[in-house]
Length: 114
Length: 114
Image 1 (cartoon, rainbow over the protein chains, first blue to last red):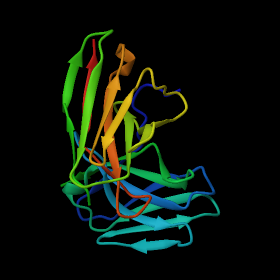
Image 2 (tube, each protein chain N blue to C red):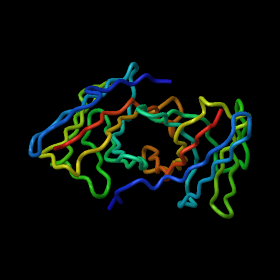
Image 3 (cartoon, rainbow over the protein chains, first blue to last red):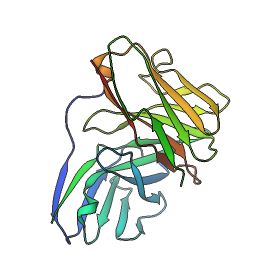
Image 4 (cartoon, rainbow over the protein chains, first blue to last red):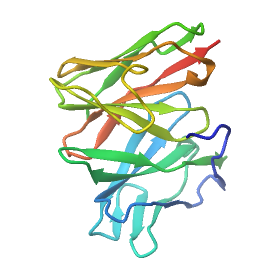
């Protein structure tokens, strides 16, 4: 069952620094991995994704790295800004027949100090 | 990306009552999903709602407790039945994006059961 209480890892960085958020996933058969950003009081917002046959993908100020050997995913945010403060979730997508299902990781709370 | 709205945005309900949450998508989508997110925690998939068929529930969630309707390609409802304080949570709906594993989320419904 689900546990109760705050269990989010936290990361605090200075504005302008680079941030690295890590995630361990569980299903070696997952096809896609996605990073979501969730600001307080809002639903998760898609940031970037990566397919399982890739090890790196870059977006605007963000880079996702995938290490399938150790089932590890990371999100790098360059020149972190106060607007980047949020909870970041990784999610793995695995095919469940006719559709994909997302399994979310625990999340990391990123705080950017001005 | 799809724009998703939910109603109500929040509610405070008495134990033993039921609440129906509405989710509206601005475009037609085949797959919609309902999640629960307890404060400070990750998202847990409740069920997948396909238009024209019964919802598919995840382990630990049953139709009698969380009945779902999907009357057309832009709308779904989730009912939380016979509520107890343990049902206090944020309930999020999502819809598939143009890529099969992508999901776009609504803002969530914050439910408090007293």
